[in-house]
Length: 429
Image (tube, rainbow, N blue to C red; front, side, top):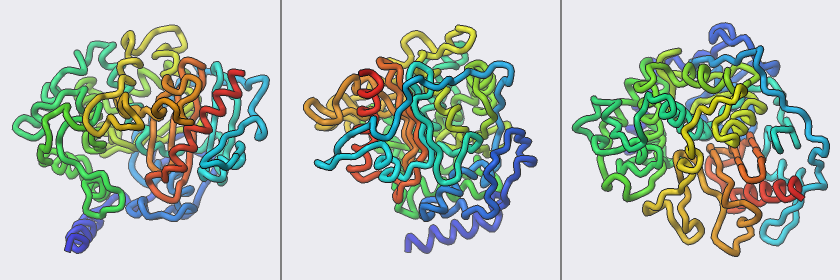
């Protein structure tokens, strides 16, 4: 019965869909068009059930599957990424998972890597493109976008456009008064401890996440998503329980847009993209182009520009002219893992989630707990998108992947941390 209801909803939305059209670079007014051109794109509505090959094509063309807001670089201010003198080679990296030994090439195969870059001291220590991708490819981040939006919240606080993370979100979204969100603070929204019920199950066609995906096929996706999110019920007191929620992350984006009076892409362009020294244009999935963007996912950029963003975070928010775009101590605050039920576990006694950043080290004695691993934090997206930042050793890694499933097996999840630990060890010896 559930399948029937959701199928009817899906059919209804598709009837009014404008998303099925494929957007061209010309339609998006995108000048830095990728050189890899795929003629046939997989149906974006089936994203969660694509084959791995469909996922390769779909992820590098997500910017063509939905309408988007383009964010532009300053071509006169590009942050150079020189090659590290002693770059990483296959035999330089060794790690073991469940008693088996692996190297760099094994990792690329095991993780279905479609792109991988490692920076050490702002220099490229390793760069790899697979599956037909290249330096111009615009790959979707999935939920790594959440970490980017959380960072923009920090920028807005530094500029005084948001007073504090302790502000109630109804201060920026007053029409949420009288709803389950009324007592939720921005900090709780960022930490996913709102207490508002949300089903993120990627395998459940009736989940809240699936309904959000279907809404993105409607003529007015923002109205559809906002209505669903606004009508959610409260399950716990705010701040008590951690529960991952793309619905809550969507509202983080709404708070940002309300506070800054700019859509996410434009605010990113003016305060980060042009000022840090990004090289190429990117696209943010929009619900209304250049007015409303999706705060929970939808960021598309080149591999090197992802790495430059990681370097911006690593530099604690300093841009090319030395200006500091983030509040003092923001990164430390954003990666102070919350202690709510669900965030803390035996493996993660300090908590697993901050301001839309992940903790991926483990308890004392674990093979994942190595040199400065506790200082490393991660932006993570389904199917293997990940941004790892180790500020103590000045290392950034960005990975594009097409895992078989949205969420990793324990082996895949552990492998990413073991690999990054091995990279860190090699680059700091």
